[in-house]
Image 1: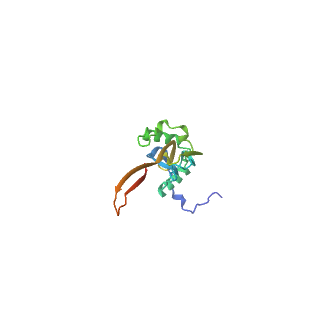
Image 2: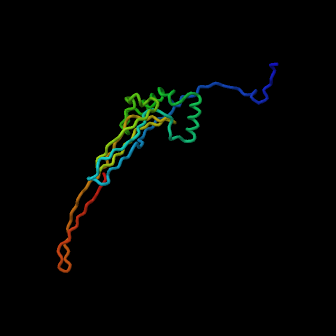
Image 3: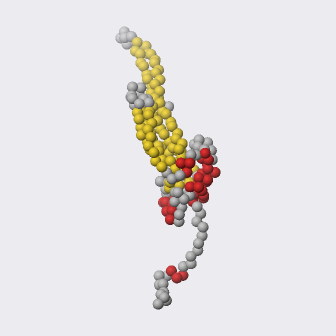
Amino acid sequence: MFNLIDRTGLNSVEMKCCDVPNPCSSCTPKESFINVVSCDNLKGAPKADPLTCMYTRVVGVEMSSRKSVTSFTMSEVSRSVGFGAGIGLGPLSANVMKSLGNSKATGTDWGQANRKTYKTQTTSRSTITVPPGTKVILEQVVAYCGFYEVRSLNLRKTDIKTVVRSETFSESVRKNGSHILTKNLHTFLER
């Protein structure tokens, strides 16, 4: 009665247990800036009104949206054996802090980063007011480690202003008794 034979071919399979390395500990962190919002109020300067722009800010750890097929497969395997975004936050934060430290490239001290940086991602909305004749670009510091993305609280704000420089020059031209022709040149520069 209990002498059933498995005819699926699995009788000859040997199973071995092994440690799966934590991808949070074995990845190599790299950091960069990503665009959060670009708010342009250059047109109509200086007569334009201030412009208010809304933006979404994401802070914390998540599986990266910049995945290749290989890292997508690895993230699915890691997730299936228990290494989701929340599981490896301790090893991930330790790895990022140790590897990136106080970064001169982004001005971020990963060792002193706010606790929100190393928790599951949260989203908030905010606004920024841009004066006339200005374009504001907000960028966020992000660390990538394998298929993990760590978004810090740090933002870099760049103001691009319209500068009006007026150059005046004159040409004296005598044609059929005409007088002086004067030209005014106004140059608009972005810095």
